[in-house]
Amino acid sequence: MRCGICNYTPLELTTTTMEEWDGDELIVIEEVPVEKCPQCGEEYFKPEVLEELEALIERRRQLPQLQPEAILQVPVFKFALAV
Image (cartoon, rainbow, N blue to C red; front, side, top):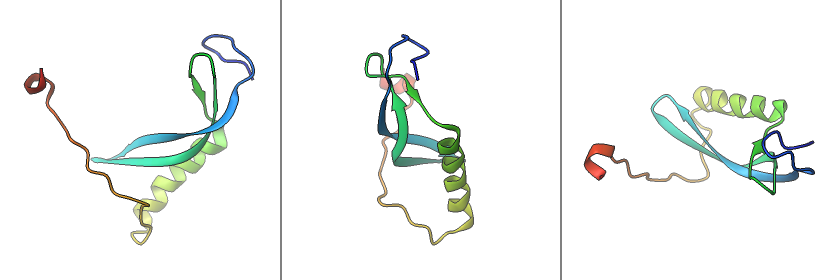
């Protein structure tokens, strides 16, 4: 596959970390398979990977016993007060 941004080939098979909002909760999913351009950093996800990510979020809602690997605390700032 060729990068759609910079036209570089070949892309690297690697993993990445995804952040996804589920309502008012931020979910972090590590080790997600991705094809990444080593030149510009653009990432491409296979359709089946995106489907699995959606299924994971849905399973999380339906199975309260499904526990995360870790829980992170994230500081939140209001832009107007931070600058």
